[in-house]
Structures are given as structure tokens and as C-alpha cells.
Length: 303
Image 1 (cartoon, rainbow, N blue to C red):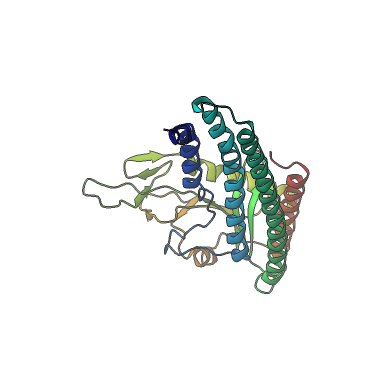
Image 2: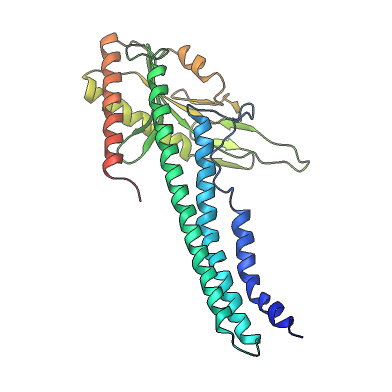
């Protein structure tokens, strides 16, 4: 049966087909969309539409880069199987398999170039939208405003998540994500008890979060005192989004919150005397440190 000579070589394509199925299953592995732990709604930032298109472009790049070698090798693998089962060697047929593989290589090279150019255009468009968005934010957060928020402030060996400057003090905000366990009946347990040195979650406890928050507060207090030539009231805030906080035994130096209405909570929490001159120096010092950190990241990009 001559048709078996063409059917049996398909066995050699099964490993390639299985690899292609895995690649297709992983194509949406990189999905940067996140949902709010408060109301489960998608969080949107400036340029969100371009961010979504950029995610799809990266998914396309992943598919073309991963499927390309698999698809281009398929004719050659099938041809080698044909050589094993064929009664006569037909060199024209082998040449066709080689030409088909070459054509597929050219096609996937074109697709990769297209994906690369699309990503470059989308990143440029996203950068423009972010730049305009930051300028528009000055309408509600001008440089001279008494409230100012900084993100990812570099300390000596770590990064502080957020620093909020208010008219009555500076808050160091650290956020931690913890999944909710389930009890024997399948009910979600979302209450955490705050103690002096640890957080007691359902089923486990940890000390590192409170310790890191206090460490960040101590570093920022000393750094601001040196940079601003004056004492600055600083308090730590630990945010656990999605959790119900039991603060009956909580310490006074660290404020542990769920994150809901955090802005109102900070605005209503006085820390002490905070001179206006020192307030402005704090903002300038933090802005300078943020700018230096961004320049260092540009000069030494992570690999």
C-alpha cells in the first residue's frame, strides 16, 4: 500500500505537534491586566488601551518566535520519515521539502520583524500618552500642592513602595499581597489580627512585613533629617488589600489598614508639627532622589 509511505511519517510529527499545543496554551501567559482587590474591577491607567494592544503584540511575538522553529522543522522531519519508509528515493520530493522549510523560515522572519516594529510603535505611543498624562496630573497635583505622593523610592538596599507627603507629616506606605485561605466548610477567611511584632493570619503568622515597614520608616526619618536640616514626622503604614484588620492589639508606630479610603485616612491622621519650609524641602528632596533613581535605571538597565 503506497499510501502508507505518506501516512506513517506523520508519527515523527507528533512531538512537534505536542510542543505546538503547549505553546498555544501558554500564549496568554503574559497578561498585565490586574483587578482591584476591593471591587474586582479592572484597574485602568493612562494609556490602558495601548497597554492592552502592547500585551497582544508581545503575545504575537511569543507565538511567532516559539511556533516558527516548530513549523519550519515540520517539512524536514516529515521528509526524513519519508526517506525511511519510501521504497525509492525521489530527490525532487526531498528538494521540495527543503524549499518549503526555507519558505517558512522567510515567512516567520517577516512576522517577527512585523511584531518588532509594531511593539516599537506601541511603546512610543504609550510613552507619549504617559508623558501627557503626567502633565495633566499637575492640574490636581501641582508641585506646590501640600499633598504629594511618590512611588518606588530607593533606600539603601531596598525600595519603599510609596511615600505620601501631607501638610502634617510624611507616611511610608508598604503594601503586601496575601491570598485568603479557606476553612473546612469552604468559606474564605479574610481577617488578620495585628500584634506588636507580628501579623496573625488564619493558619500562619509573619513578622517580616512589620519589621520591613519599621525599617523603611527609620531610614526615611534619618535621611530626611539629614537632607532637610530638620526633624520630619514620619509614620509607617502597612496596607493589606482585601483583608479585614483587627487592630485591638495593634502597635502605635505602624498603621495597618486594608487600603480602602486610604487617602482619607492619611489626611485625617495628624503626626505633629510640620513646618511649611521643611514640608517643601521634603518634597524637593524626594523628587531629586526619584529622578536620580530613574537616571540610574536608564544608565544600568536590568538584563
